[in-house]
Amino acid sequence: MNYLKHEGKDTQIMRPVFVYGTLSSPQVVETLLGRPQSVECPSASLDDHSRHPVKGFVFPATIPNPQKQVNGFLIEDLSPKELELFDWFEGDEYSRKVVEVRTKNEESLEAFAYIWNPDLMHMLLLDQEWSFEKFCKENEEWYLKNTVRPCREEMVSLGLTK
Figure 1: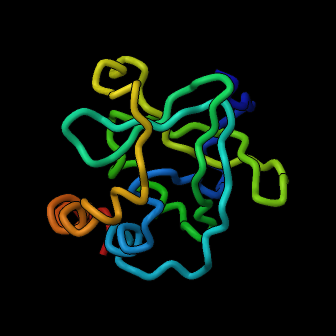
Figure 2: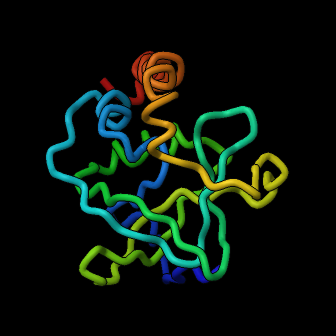
């Protein structure tokens, strides 16, 4: 895929984070970070990618897919420490990549996005699109209680955050 190539440690430069799944929920982000989001998250899209359910889970994966587009939001107010928390939360199933996204005003900008590990493609329901609306309606409360809050508690107990 056409991920942006940079010299040096491009993942050390702070950028907005393009979120397209469970992290699109303000409640999920606020619970994970232990603070409210300080700014509204503008909408954006990631071209040449698609978003699919992960078998047996309520969260999605985004993968390279020409001619497709994933809609999401930009979180612009993360600290470097909070970005590390996102990395920990996303786990080994995803890699944080520098991508080019388009804002609703058609402006292109660089952002981080968590892209699904290609070695785990067998875990995806590739014939289906993941629905944020369905997640919010059917799974968000369960996910907050059974995934996000326990992750937050574990991050605190490990000293990753306060």
